[in-house]
Image 1: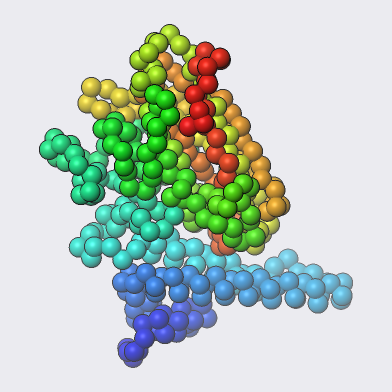
Image 2: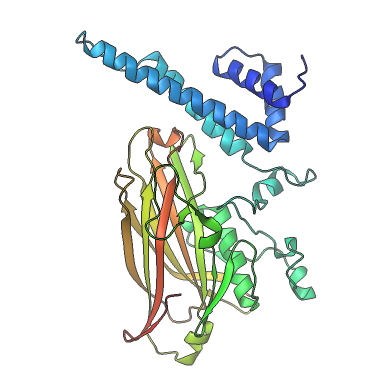
Length: 366
C-alpha cells in the first residue's frame, strides 16, 4: 500500500473510501491499525464520519422540501440509508477505538479499563495500586480491585466505568484519605464525601447554559449497543461516608434528600432522553466486600428544549446498617435513534444532597 507522510491524511483518504463503499480489505485493515495506534487518528475519523452523516441529513431535508411542491413523498431515500450507515460507522468507531494512547503493553481488556484522567467523565479506577501518589499499607497493595456488588437490574450495575469509580471512591473514604484521583474529598460535620462534580464540569457549550454559576456537569459520550439499539452512559457523582452518623444512634431514621437538574442539547432526531438519578446504600462485611443493601433509580423523560432544565428531587431512606451511599446519574436512549450521533450532549446541574435525621435534624449541604 502507498505510504503517506502524514498519517492523518491517510486516515482521511481511507475513511473517505469506507464511506463511499469503495475500499479493499487491505485498506480496511490499514485504517483499523491506524485507529488503534493513535488517539488523534480516532478523533479525526469520528469527525469525518459525523460530518458525512450530517451532510446526508441536510440532503434529505432539501429533497423533501423539493418533492413537497410536486405533491409526492417517498417513505425513505437513499441519502437516509447512507446517513444512518455513516452514523453507525461513526458510533461503532468511537465505541471500538475510544481508548487513549496508554501503555502499549496493556492487552485489550486492560486498555478498556484504563483511566483517562484528562477528559471529564472518563475516569476509571479499577486498581488502587495504579496510583503511586496514594499511600496504602502493604496488605492493601497486595489486594485486587475493591469489589462492589450491585443488583443486576440497577442503572449503575450496567456501567463498568461508573461502578469502578464508585468502588474506588468507597475505598478512598474507608481508608480516611484526604485525596482521591478524579474527585475531591470534603468533610461536613461527621460525614466525609468523595465528590466528582468538579471533575465532570464544563462551561457553556452546544447551546446549553449552566443553570447556575459558570459550569455544569457533562455526561461522557454514550456507549452504544448496536444490536439492542440502546445508547447509555452512567456517571458516579458522589460517595458519602455515613459510618460515624450510623454508629451514633442505631435506631435513628435517616433520609437522603437529593435534587439534580437535567438538560440535553439539540439532537439530530429531536427526540427525548431518559435520565435517571440513582442512590445505593452500601454495607461492608468483615472482608470489606461492598454490597448494596437498598437502592432506587428515579427516572425522568427529558423535553427537547435546551433552554429549560428539569428537576429530579427525591428522598431516599437509608436502610439500617448503611455505611456508604453512592449517588450516580444515567442518560439513556432506545430505538433506532440511539444509533445516531450524540452531537448535542447531555448535562446535569444543581446537585444538592442533604441528610435528614429523624425528620428534624439536617446535615448539609453535603
